[in-house]
Amino acid sequence: MESESDGRHRLTQAIRWTARAWAIATIGVVLLLSVGEGLYPATSAEWIGLLLYPGGICLGMILAWWREGLGGGITVGSLVAFYALHTATAGQLPKGWAWLVLAVPGFLFLWCWKRSRSLTVTPA
Image (cartoon, rainbow, N blue to C red):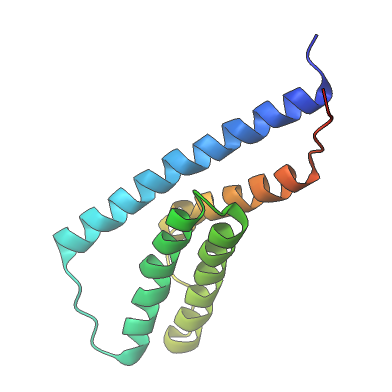
């Protein structure tokens, strides 16, 4: 019979690998868009925006493979800062759902990090 902690551990592992696969897909999409569209920011605010999204988002996802809390925090923090910058400069939130969908792995990594910290290992 499977114990409750084994079930929690398996769920955490499943979410962790989902976040990792989604992060790889996100980084791939960002690279394809960067190559296909090119990077032509004109203002300093646009350069800062690029540092936050996709720069901070992708950096956070890469770091999260080794340090889930740090990487997830960088991803989510970059997303929030990007939304704040865009709202301050454009007067509205970024349009479309893709901004959030591509950043979902950051939230999943934070969830795994928090859940892993709460799992207690019992000696065998």
